[in-house]
Length: 397
Image 1: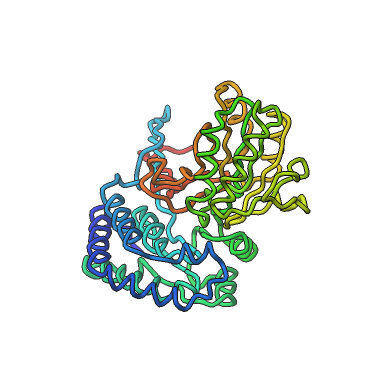
Image 2: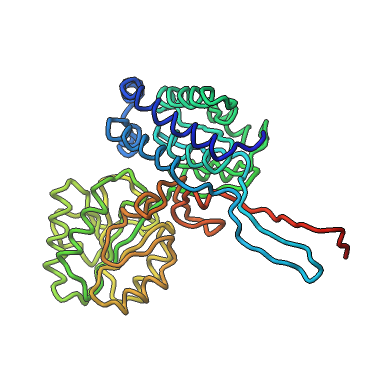
C-alpha cells in the first residue's frame, strides 16, 4: 500500500472523532450487549470491557490529540557527509503492518489503533470474543472515516478469528505482518510469543512493587499504596506487592494501619510469616506467589531488612513494569531507582502514572516490559523504525 500523507491521516483521525461522538449512544448500547453476554468470571476483564460516557470521551480526546501531533514519520535522526561527497541521512519510517491482539478493551480499537495509523501503519486488529460486538461497531466507524476521506478500508482490518485460526495466522500469516503487539494477560502474551513468526513487543504484565523505606513518610505511604492498589485493579500499573523496612521507626503501627486501610477497601491482604500475627490477613503459603500479577483486590505485604535486599527481591520477582520507593532520603531513592530493573521507577508517587497520557506522550500503543526497541509506554514517536537515505553522484568504493 502506498504511504498516506500526514494531512490524509489527520483528516481520517478527525473524522473518526466526529463519528464516535455521533455514534456515542450506539457504541454504549452495543457494549451493553457484550457486558450482558459476559459471564463475569474475571473482575478485571469485566472492568476493562465496559464502555461508558467517560470512556467514549477518552476515545474522542485520544483521536483529536493524535490528529494535532507532529508526524512521527520522516523525522531526520542522523546526517553525515562523507569525504567523497555522499550524503547519508537516517529518518524515521513506518513499520508497515502492525497486528494488535488484545483482550476485553474496546477502547484499544481506537486508541492503540489510532496511534498505529497515525504512525503510517496498516492496522490488523484481533480483539477478544468477549468484546466482539463493541469492536465490530468501532471498526465500522474506522471504515466509514476512511471512506469519507477516499482512503482504502484495507488500512484498518479486523480479524474475526477463533483461537485456532489466530494460532494459524501467527504461524503462517496470509499477509505481511511487521510487528505484533499483544495487549492482555500473561496467557495471551505467552500464546503470541509461542506462535508468532515476526517481532513481538511484550506488553501489559505488571506485578508492581512498593518499598516503604526506613525513612518513609508513612502518611504519604498509606495514600500512595491505597491509590496504586485500589483506583483501578484491572490496570497493569496497579500495585500487587509491598515491602516494609523492618527499621521503620513506627513499623508495627504503620503496618497495622496499612492492613486495616486495605481491609476497609475490601482488599485481601496476604502477609509473609514475619507479619502472620496481624489481624485480617492470610499467611503466605507459597513463595511463587511473589511472581504473580493479581488484577484483583489482593495484595502481598512482606518485611525487608535493607535497601539492598529490597532491590534484590524486586528484581527477582517483579514483572519489569514499575517500582516505587517511599522515602525522604533522596540519596537512598536515587540508589534504588538506578538499581531496580523496571521500565519506570518512582520516588513517593503512585505506579498508576505509568501511562502514555500521564507521561506526556498523548496516549500509548502499549506499555512494553521488553528492552527492545522501546521500554515502558510506547507513544506515537516510538512506533516507528528507521531508514537510511544515501545521496550520491556516481561515487564508487
